[in-house]
Image 1 (cartoon, rainbow over the protein chains, first blue to last red):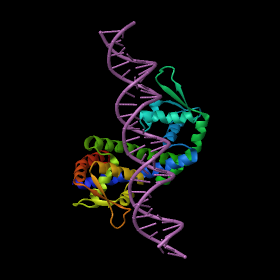
Image 2: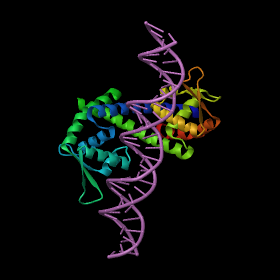
Image 3: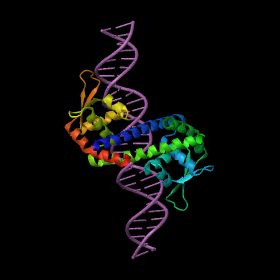
Image 4: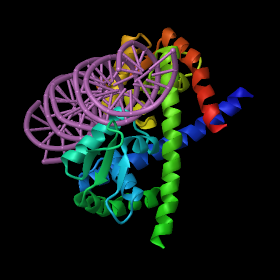
Length: 128
Length: 128
DNA sequence: CGAACTTACATGCACGTGCATTGGATGTCA
DNA sequence: TGACATCCAATGCACGTGCATGTAAGTTCG
């Protein structure tokens, strides 16, 4: 019966919604209060930090876009905010001057490493 | 080890994020294109339609707020939009004139019932 | 009663987002 | 080489959201 199937998927969606909402709100609040970072800003730092462990992480905008659930424009502005805060630098790629390289600054890496435990703690609380 | 736990919950969160993002975007787009409804607008209609099957559904704002992941202000504006579109009516409660009763108009019920299959179809596609 | 508190909802405001567009760089093909 | 399509990133704009506040109605307690 349709109704049964409907209720089933409805419940799953409902549950996803609940988990997503609770977790993202808490992440947003704790990252903001404790480290002055929005969630998508943190995610950018996280990807950059992973893309080149040890040295300053670097990646192209397109790579970030592919790894994040964020539109091109939103990503562009997120990076602008990070740049203004001195956590990231933009450098135009020499071989393709349309593209940007992003680099984590020392301050950026520091901020990320400070925020990561907070982030992990929230996730553990919701998914452990 | 912390790292292992961290990776584990991270993967779960990642998956939740992926599912949420894909599903909500698709819901948003299909409801908007096909029925001129935003997702939260649809959710309000859905709750109203359930709160009193058969007759015109009615509920108080506070009840909706409790059932939805939406702030009080966002809900207020969502209902305003629905009211402007003639899908819902606000009526101040006689016994507590602070409170609003919300009623599904016939147009509202019609619109909801037209949109519901679209909604269900998307959910089935993502959760079946 | 009446003053202080609480509750329900609306509204001003700032902010992050997506869509559409723009501008500049690259690629393609005749 | 020149014309045209494609790609990358930034920006104008509209919109929905949350937070803080305002307003009006209810509640409590002396």
